[in-house]
Image 1 (spheres, rainbow, N blue to C red):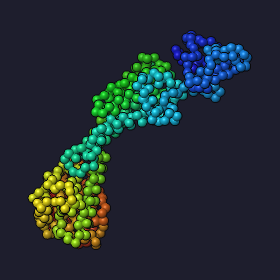
Image 2: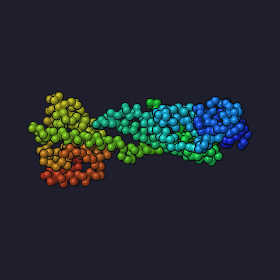
Image 3: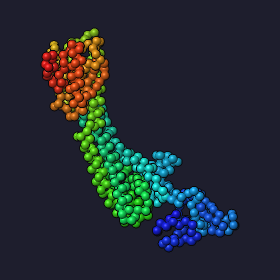
Image 4: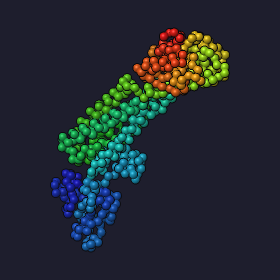
Length: 495
């Protein structure tokens, strides 16, 4: 219970005038936690406790049970209840502080509403000892929701492209989808950078101009609990455009709460927010964009990792198709991988990876291209399509050891799955250098059905080890996959 003019403690007074500044006050103007304040009879010192929502006496006027005198709440001598510190008597009614009784969702929405209404109410409610950790948790939840939610429409729209094989439109959609994910991460970093900068600079400025009467934790509370206006960035398609307005609104509310919490003059709180808010926004946006750009050009990205996973799924399906073909009593030799389309085990897009510029129309299959094959079962292929498959198979040299279809190099020639080592490679997912846009790894499919990925730097050593294994089974060594093209299959003796 502090003077609203000079912040002097008003406990244990029989008059209603502040001893420090001379301002008059009324008991009814203050609020406390129910039961946190003793209302003592001015005649006999009998203690009573407020029980209503404001911590006031009910009724406010009655006869003292000890001395029988008629007394009113305004006449009482006020003290904190036994075992309660002065700073702990004030109500902490910010909804987030009541989340155990209100529920997390209701408490979050309630605190967001308080933030929209301005920060004065929040600042006045946060009296007593600061509790910064719950406030930081609220800010973290809010910023995570805003960062993900503001990019959710783009992510949902582009999600099919994240898992679509091949190049062209599918790959473009995938790139946009990963851009949405990266932008959400960069936004979250930017928000936290702004939050941290505003907290530290505003408290420093407020201290320098003599307005900080509370700890840094109190500043953390008001800055975090007033971030509600950020949720307007969840408006679809407008989040990025209105983000400066949302952040400015947040900082204005934070300044109002800062003044109320620290009992600072309006000019002190305004100066603190101006000198902290502008640098914070610059730091946050620059850091966010640096992270976004660096993710694309400097380090392996989650999108690249998924591209590797797609290639792994592709080579796995190719290896399975080969094993099924080899188990057929009518095995065709030499077997061209495009003939897997005739059995319906793979689709045309399976021959392309996510890290390629190739399209189905760029991949020859005899006199046709992959774009001439519909994604249907082999039983429905037309005679012209089957003729093209036979033409492709006939074009393979008798001593072929590897041939390419799209981004896949097939190395199963001469391998008997019944007797070969499970670690022998049967297919390599490796786009030609001219067709790659940054596939982070080369993926191989094995006789046993497993897959393994290698970086471009590690692949030469893996290829040497594979060729040593092939030598044990009387197989010719494989060249680098970049040497195997659609026009020039690898043949024994090329090495």
